[in-house]
Amino acid sequence: MRQLTDVTGLVNDLIELARDEEPQPLLEQTDVAALTRHAVDTARERWPRVGFALRVDAGAEGMLRPGIPARLTRLLTNLLDNAAKFSPPGGTVEVGLTERGLTVRDHGPGIAAEDLPHIFDRFYRAPPPGRCPAPASAWRWPGRSPAPTAPS
Image 1 (cartoon, rainbow, N blue to C red):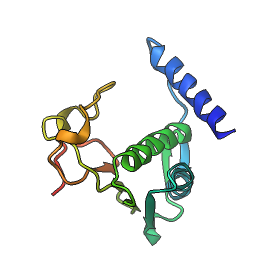
Image 2 (cartoon, rainbow, N blue to C red):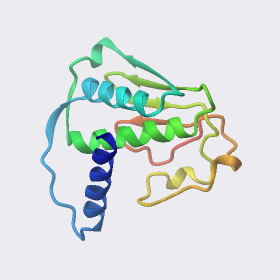
Image 3 (tube, rainbow, N blue to C red):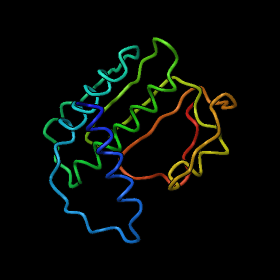
């Protein structure tokens, strides 16, 4: 059943990308902690050989933010899937939620410095991770930083 849901989501994503114009989405007050817990639980099922450590600060409990739950779930699912995919065997993906934002960190090969300015470009795909010098990658929400930097 989950595979059917995944395929349906992919088809809907392709339809959305094929549109010339983005429809104006309806924003909802979204419980970010609940959405994050659900995405991490789903990732644990999908990636049983990877550990997921979730830390939600007390101030983030019940935190509501305007958003589109389906898109936020897709975004977080993609981040968690990528973190798990590039984590070493037995590795752990760290997910942290505070009042200031959400952080996803893995301990995989990282993102090459020359790819960092492009990681938020639509359809951008970095070359295989074998040539990446950074020890890990991290993503922080809210907002997009204009010049991401490799973690140290």
